[in-house]
Length: 84
Image (cartoon, rainbow, N blue to C red; front, side, top):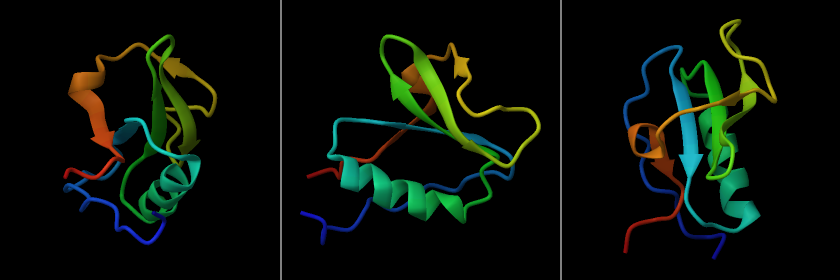
């Protein structure tokens, strides 16, 4: 439910690319986007298994919104689904 807390964020290095993965309702992704907006990450992406990492927000000149990066999900994931 929306009242469930997100998992704690790992240490995020300044300027890092954070890729959100996992099956979750859109409101859970919204909570994660809001939480990550104040982080030191340089860019935020969502993982699409057909495309790769799609940049959805950036504060870095190294990334542009809407671009797709070919990354391995296992190397970049920040799962928005809480562990049970």
